[in-house]
Length: 398
Image 1 (tube, rainbow, N blue to C red):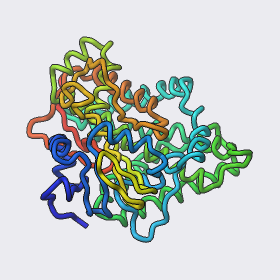
Image 2 (tube, rainbow, N blue to C red):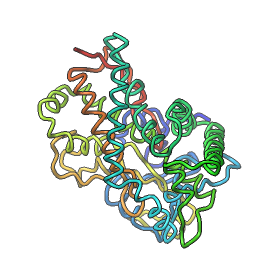
Image 3 (cartoon, rainbow, N blue to C red):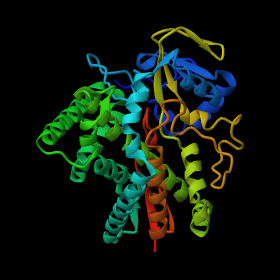
Image 4 (cartoon, rainbow, N blue to C red):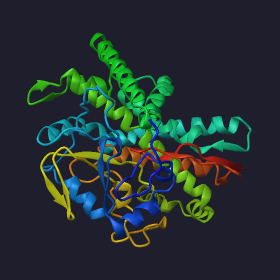
């Protein structure tokens, strides 16, 4: 159900409001000055911290804040709480569930994935060039496809099912913002898909992550199907819209800031620091925590059962922590952002996402060193939980 426009961001915020999705920066600046931890009764009610220190304090406090409900939006009515280890887990189970996955994100495996990532980027850029058109959608024609194909490659599921995977991510993180039935249906379809993958592997195993999970143990016991299905759900959904949004935001920035674009082309050694700055300035992900014991944060009392949104994007724009916080400085040296979270739930796939962003931007600039936002282009930003540009129409120059 569509929400009424926000009148007071301190007491009635809405992360699904179009003005928040399009430009939350001024809202965060105002709240830090007047009400650093906002509150709302919308969408089931929640608190919204806007400073780096408050977000970090909550993320580190596993005694008062549980990760069993990480969704920014409320669960659909009647829905069973989705268990997706390790992100929805608390200690000590969390540590064990995370350890099961660590080897899949090792430097050796990431190096292997980089080879496939460069192949995917080349295929996408070839397709853009093959149209012969002077314009393209840097998000829809390029950024959107990279992470979904790479996570499919890791899981051992067909890359040809990409459109279906992307459709599920769009349903959960975009279309379902005001329609919980869409979210519930997508979750059911994803779990049914992976149930079939498990059945197939019991007939014939593969050299992939799903087969590895089926062979894994915790405390000497095999993982339950519920655990495996939840982890597969997590890896697929976390690996799509988040990195797609990061790549899309980066290319949008370069399309609208030609001096940064030209400098990155001339000084490719800045790529690593540029990626970190894009992650800081355009952090896509907000997560949630459930208060499990009454607590006070920065003078704001919270009660058991309350929801708190871990507003990593706002924390990364906090001027107390970052000089010129609202400026994008591609050679920024001091950059301790938490775009990938902080504390025990820091993103397990952060180095895969970094690699994908780096390769995507490098290959795009190699092919299209000069490009800009198309005239009269409308860039739609979206996502209550994962924010990024959904379309980035650009004009390409040879």
